[in-house]
Image (cartoon, rainbow, N blue to C red; front, side):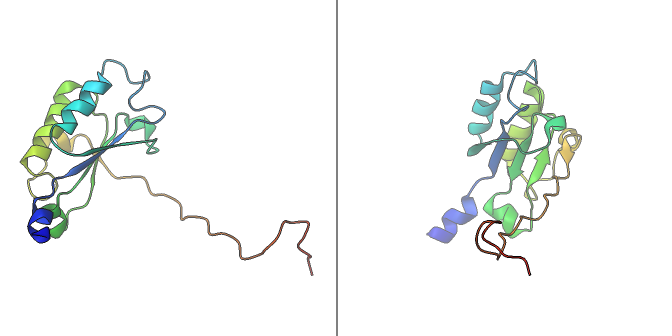
Length: 136
């Protein structure tokens, strides 16, 4: 049974609602309705700033279990700033999303490569505060 449930797992959506997305900087969008519409199709995670403010509103569609099994990766969509764009995203998710269904041409205009994050800073192996450390 768990395998069958995994095959049916839907796409998941991450919606940026950080400093620019979902706020007054992006005018003419009913941000609440956008979330509600996407939630009718898939689980939605509301995220803090994803770091691509110039592309607000940002929506990331993560593939379903079937899509992941076929090698799909998350698809980043920018400038999802109106009901038509939101409906296009919702329709693609409903149809199956990444790899399961080819991305509609209209959504291809919104696709962008995610930002490359710098590698995480590893904690120093040196113990103590600078005053406690002695330099040779």
